[in-house]
Image 1 (cartoon, rainbow, N blue to C red):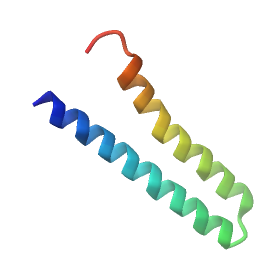
Image 2 (cartoon, one colour; image 1 turned 30 degrees about the vertical axis):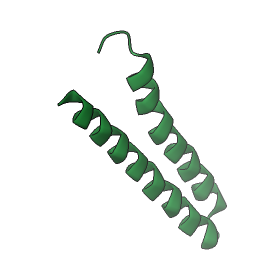
Image 3 (cartoon, one colour; image 1 turned 90 degrees about the horizontal axis):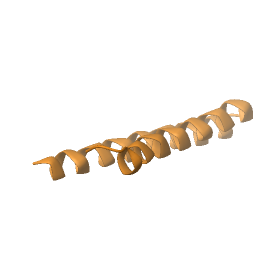
Length: 60
């Protein structure tokens, strides 16, 4: 049961990061470079922070 929840968390995290990254690509294409860089950083944080918490938290 917990395995399915873990997979669900990873899938939702990756999906959100990809959506944010693609929105950054759209912003860059429209000429909003500063916004695109911010969205790329947000996508990276969205992907890495939950995975870091998942793998390195002391108690499961």
